[in-house]
Image (cartoon, rainbow, N blue to C red; front, top):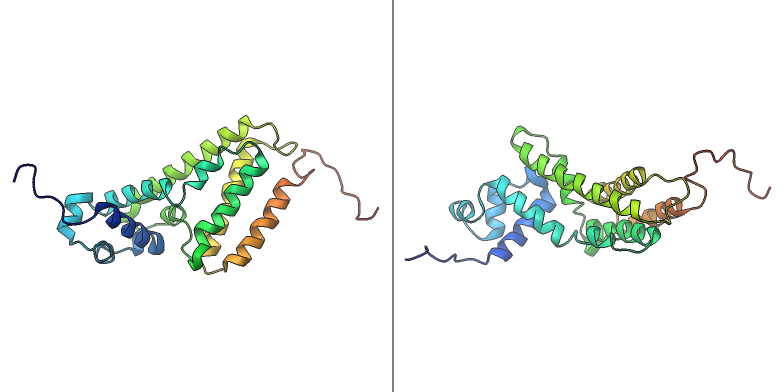
Length: 208
């Protein structure tokens, strides 16, 4: 048949199912049997359509960034630092612990892959994360309402550290409601006045 036989499965649906498997189990925890079973295809069909497991993970990683994690890039359009930080941190709670799921973050799980067969997946996840932090730092450099004394690079790292921590806590089963409270408390600290000065001096006791 010219052009080969048409695929007998829905590629987008198969990728969504593969994303769910990788997201829940991590790269190393997702076996080929898990992946092909969820996707509803056999191994030859998977290899023919998506390549090996590493290739599939790379494809799924892009799908994750354009889909469930798209809020991170969208947050960069916020006109103020406060709105950007709120969108980034609060949406991370929804991503990692919303809808009763405790999946954590796919990229955080990806960089924690440590076996010799996971090197490319780890590199792919690391590259994505570095690019995201660089984009955040670049956006922060454009804003004129950062906390006094704050360095954009340090602030970008801090926000990513907060969202990473939320993801790890979510993956370990911490309830969404508790993570929401933690996120709100962290934002109050990040957005509070006087916390970023290079020489703030001793604070006066309350009521003094």
